[in-house]
Image (tube, rainbow, N blue to C red):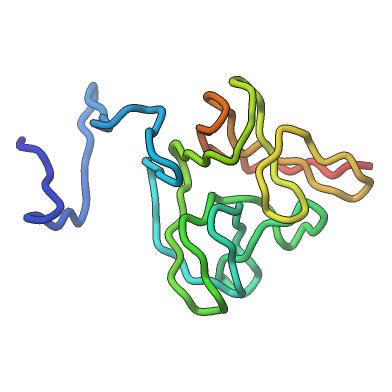
Length: 156
């Protein structure tokens, strides 16, 4: 099978046979600020969303920024790769994969969580009533691997 060339082909589905894998042809440690690779989908915003924030599915079926202090704004399902100034805007969401942000300053191996403003943090929420969810791990200071666990633990 030949290589997929986005400018010439439209990939509508893919099957991976037993013993085979999907391989990304770019380095795992993405080299450009605000670049991402992995499993992405386009979802509709339910409110304004800031780019590069963690998002969750709201009760209206649309995505909104995640908030560790509000169970209705959890669990995180991925990272918004573009902003939405209001509701009903298409937002590309990285669900599983790598993302680079040069403003990060993590230590490789840090488990990552979401805070009350949708930001990734290496510090688990600790206030009573907050919800803890591991959403990924730092690969180096500015590249993270996103793979949200669907388990939420409420801080007592």
